[in-house]
Length: 196
Image 1 (tube, rainbow, N blue to C red):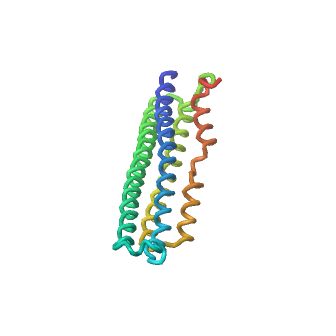
Image 2 (cartoon, rainbow, N blue to C red):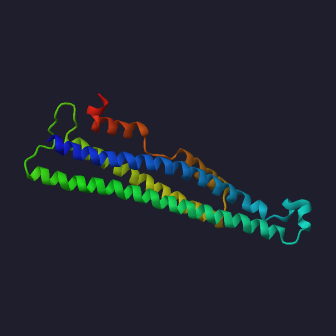
Image 3 (cartoon, rainbow, N blue to C red):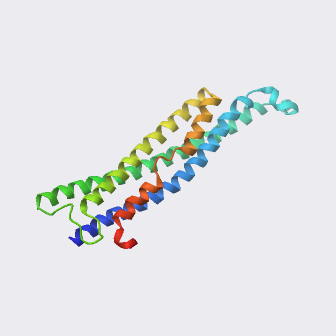
């Protein structure tokens, strides 16, 4: 039974590695979003010739500045899209860990191994599966939120709305819906014997 629990804990270790990757991606995501939204906010001003003052005498300055900003915005959006794909990959890993765990659990139930059996302070198989399930659900929901935010940001490029952009910025900064305390509790339960 201890060997079975160790295998489950290995799955959770992989989940913990994915969590660390997710947090690093989150930092990059927030930074890129801030830069992209700053450009979108400036685009209307950059298209107003009055804003250029004495520089208006330079032929094509307005178009050149706008084009440069649009090129930079395109680069930022591409980077965000790539990070979104990395988030999706993390979700797929959590899904695979959960799916593999569920199929193993079904086999254990058929072979009469008690999934709720504990050995000392070690978690039972049911605890491990529940932890994997929670991690998968949290990350899947978070990914869908990020994909929606990215889609909304892309729409704001064509039809900028300062209020909507500001609301999205607040959401991006505040949105990590994965409570770190809850995730830490999952890992504390699963790796109980390593903590004590």
